[in-house]
Image (cartoon, rainbow, N blue to C red; front, side, top):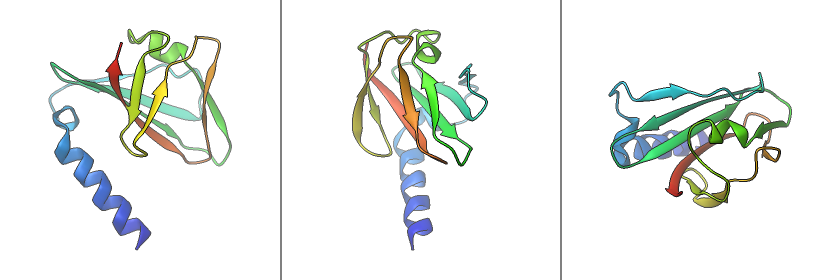
Length: 110
């Protein structure tokens, strides 16, 4: 039941946001952490960052990975999966990922 519910939610996200379409609109991120893969999707109005911890360990992502994509300190992003807002920290601070955790961050305010 949990897998079906999660798959249904992923499909709903894909349908709700045009930047998930295949429009040659993907930029891979340098995450500075081999445990985390990340990319940016975008369209003329919106940007989203999709990040995945593919390990069974806690992993940390420097906010520097976002500043390299033009996202500055104090930018507000919404995690489209958990529906929580996240404020971008300074380059020397970190976003923590639980084992096998993922986050889908839509830029709200720069």
